[in-house]
Amino acid sequence: MKTVQLLMASRFEEVLRPMGLTLGQWTVLRELKRSPGASASELARAAFHTPQAFGSILQQRQVDGLVERTAGRGRIVDNRLTVKGHKVADESIVRVDAAVSPALEKLGQKNLEELLRLAEAFIAALRESVQPAH
Image 1 (cartoon, rainbow, N blue to C red):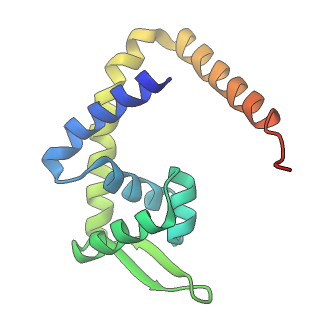
Image 2 (cartoon, one colour; image 1 turned 180 degrees about the vertical axis):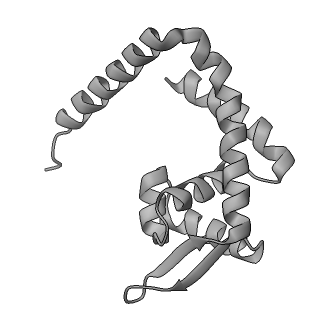
């Protein structure tokens, strides 16, 4: 699984680099596309990062004109993609999808469905096996 993760990250970086994006920066755009108005903490949880790391990436994307940050619920800052941010996110998602689609096509639909089924079963088993800390 780690090999798959590393190979995918490397492939994603290859197609994102010409756009001036790192994998972490792309993750911010992708998550904001999925969850407009999300806080840094919500985005970080969805992307398996720390809120601090996401906060600094969000601030830089705001400077770049890709993200709009506004006062939200209490002290929480809501984050949304700007028009430019939507365009960059859409283009980057197309590039990332194109980078992995040849490999997915080689698996074939039946194998891909089985891979997803097994991954979901493994995730569920891992979640069930988590023991509370004493």
